[in-house]
Structures are given as structure tokens and as C-alpha cells.
Length: 505
Image 1 (spheres, helix red, strand yellow):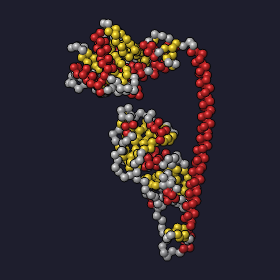
Image 2 (spheres, one colour):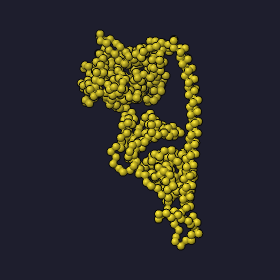
Image 3 (cartoon, rainbow, N blue to C red):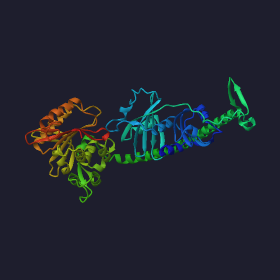
């Protein structure tokens, strides 16, 4: 078996055995779940074999080890992982959520009790869903210590992991087990030569030696004792953890009490701000730790990697109020700002958008936007302006060093879908801004999704400039005149993971 599987099994409670003490039929009668290793590996779940590896039952040696599984489903999963399954195309959790795979085997027409599994892993965390004919069982291995969780606790971990996952078809059919064949005495052998078979108990036509029965009872009693010892160890560990939790909770209460007292003493001096006022009084500045290291301009010319640029880039903020003494909805201003979706949008634009466009091969099709991203010097949040008597508003406006707006952004931060009205508002205000300033792009960012009517509005607005599917070299372009216009981009930002949906990058 795989070394990782063997290491996990060897971490289970175990004990040595000999064939004289206990046989596979004894374990089957006891409903055993775990592994038997005696030269050959046998995985068992609730008294049935779910896999034989590195040999066969006939090759079992007389001395081996019994490993007791913490859950009957683990031997099934390990048996599946030893197969060469048919896997689905890998998906990423940010593109296709795990919930979309909960019915992956609804149309399964096979006869095996266990069908397959879903596997998702990232760093030291692994998450599995084992599918059977009646439902699913969730499993998680957490951290480098491989802490084992099942069901709801496993699902809680699984839905925090971001990465690639796949569904694998790996059928497992549990089968009855039996002891390996043993040499039977020939008819002419003397009974005295086989004392362990000398006395027989005959009932209803079936015979079994009393010694065999005694060994079986003794084996089951030892199995019971091992389980009771494991139970006692777990209960002792539970009591120890409960006591530790109690001590930690007392410490938390002490710290919270001290923090509340400190907050009370300073709250009277704090300046309370509404979220709108806090953001409208904030500007973010794109700065570098040193100009001698990688910048966005270097990345634009292919002279620096994204990682090098982001290690050197920082977002500084300037406010029209005393930020160090400001509180927004009972939260310190600094924490409120970095937790805001507006801050995340600006960070994504200056840290990722240039590389997203380049990696998608759209640096020519989105040239007006792409070429000016390195020129972004600062961003104003919740900005209002008047242009020729028309009031326009944007959640984010990005400026160059001369103070010219280059990029305007509106944000739909709601669970409700983004409507055509919101897109039309952005188009109207962006068109007014572009008539006065060198605006290169307008972005509508949603934390939900775009209604079909909104997508139709976007298609209609960009049709004259080459559109999304037109033959022109300007993708998703809103043409205002023969020489002016701007790129329109629709961006999805669910769980703060950004994806340009129009054009599809």
C-alpha cells in the first residue's frame, strides 16, 4: 500500500496477535473495522473485507498486528485510494463550488455498495467525501498531525479549503472474510498427534473443537479489553482537554475584561464615523518600498515577476480626519478600511489586474486599460464630482500623478444579483467622466452575479466598439466618438476572489 496510507494506519490503536489467538472470522463476528497486517494487508469495515493488498489471504503469516480504525469508513477510503480510479476533470473551488458535486453519483447504476470519492487538498489539510449507494460520508485530515474529523466537522474544514478537487470512481464491494486454509490431518494420522483437534463438539451436524471455541472467546475478550482501554484513554484525554479549555476561557474572560476597561477609557476621546464618511474621506496611494526594486512599469515591460512587484508594492492611505482616533461602527478605522471591499478592489487592480490581462493574452485587446495601469498613482473612495452640471458618483476612481482619472469603478456588495439598472448607471456616469477626462476603463464589481438583462445591456453598449465577440481589436469597448471611449469590464468578486467575467479572462 501507499506509504502515506500505511503511516496513517500505524497511528491507530493496535496490538499483536497470532493465528492461534484470533482469526479473521473472529474479527468478522465482532464487526471489526480496521486493518490486519501479517505479511498481507487486509482492510475491514464492520466485519467485512473491503480490500486485500500486498498479497492475498492465503499468504497471511502466523504473527501480525491488528489496527483498530477510529471510524468504519476509513478502511473503505484507504481501499479506494489504492485503486487506479477514473477521475473527473479537476475543478477549482472558486470556479465550481464543492456544493455542485454533492449529487455526483445520483445516476450511478453499479452494484457496489461504495461508489467513489471526492478529494480536495491544500497544504497540510485534506478533505474527502466518500459516496455509497445511500448517501455520503465526509472525512478530513487536518494539519501536519493529521487530526481526523468526520461529518459536519469535516465539512466545516472542507469548505474553508481553496484549491483543485476531483471526483473519482473507485467502487468497493464489501465481502465476507474467512481464515486462511490450514492443513487438515490425513485419515491415518494418530489423534494423539493432533491434541488441539482431539475433542469435538457436535451440534446439528456441524463440528467445532472446544479448543477453537476457547481461543475464539479469549480473542474476543482481548478485543473487548483493547477497546475498553482505548475508551478509557479517550475519556481521560477528554477530561484533560475540558480542563484546559476551562483555563483558557478564564484567561479569555480576563483579557476581554481588561480590553473593555481600556476601551472605555479611550472611547470618550474617539471620533465616531459612518462607513460612508470614513471612505469618502480616504485616498489610497500606490507606493513602493524602494524604486530600485520591481515596479508595475517593470512588469509591464516584462522585466519583473508579479511576486517581485507585490513584494515591493504597498498601499498607503491619507484621510481628511484623524485616522488614529477614528472609529467606524465600533471598529478601529484602520481595521475597517482594510476589511472593506473598496480596499480589496483597489489592491486587486494594482496588484493583479495587469498580470491577469497579460496571462489571458488580452494586452492588445484591452490596450487602453492595460497600458495605463502602471500609471495609477492614487485612488479616491466614494468619490462625487460635477461635470458640466451633471453629478456623477463612483465607489473608486484611480488617478495618475497629474490627477487625471484613468479608471472608474462601482461596487455591488450584496447577495442580490446585479441588475441592468446598476450597469446603466455606471455606463451613464462613466460616459460623462470620459467626455471630460482620459478615462480608459469602467469596472462594475459584484460580490454576487450579473442578471442576464445586465449582460444584455453590456453587450449592446460594447457592440459598436468591437464588442466582446466582434472582429475589432478592442475587446468590450464602449465607443463614445471616433477617437474616444473606454473598456467596460464586469468583475465577479465572490469570497474576495476576483474574476473578470466580461471579457472572460
